[in-house]
Image (cartoon, rainbow, N blue to C red; front, side):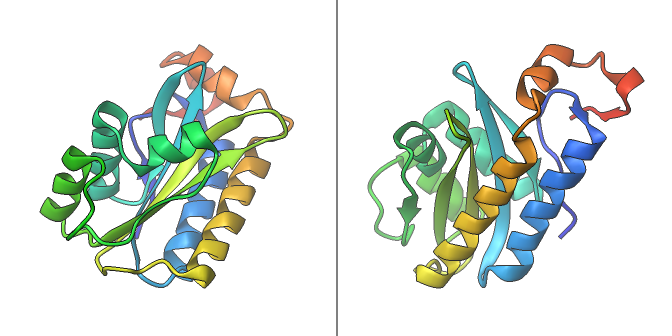
Length: 174
């Protein structure tokens, strides 16, 4: 998979590279990971920062507008799971989109710094019941790496503030 920027505002290249590496590692390390999306949040705004593919981006957008495990994880601070899209009743629009894209299960892991939940990483699998304890540990480690990439930098503020006018800083616009 070749992770790409999703629907994010302009993002400094070094941050995009760090976050792309994080989700690329998830795709390689986590058995069953077919689609990975990393979304950042600030002041109630949500934007898709990095997605491994168009399916991850499409599912992330459905979650942003209709709800899903990522929003639940972001607001609660707890891991949210869909063990099987065959029999999951919560988030009907998201579940229908998952079925449409051949997704059997998903896990959403909050990304936090010392003070706030700043994002969420959602991993979707084509398999049902794909995310056991080992896959969860891998996901939590990846969420920690994503948080560490954002620590000490006013990056989320800066990315939102810059919008599409950051070309002088060497940015990629989504």
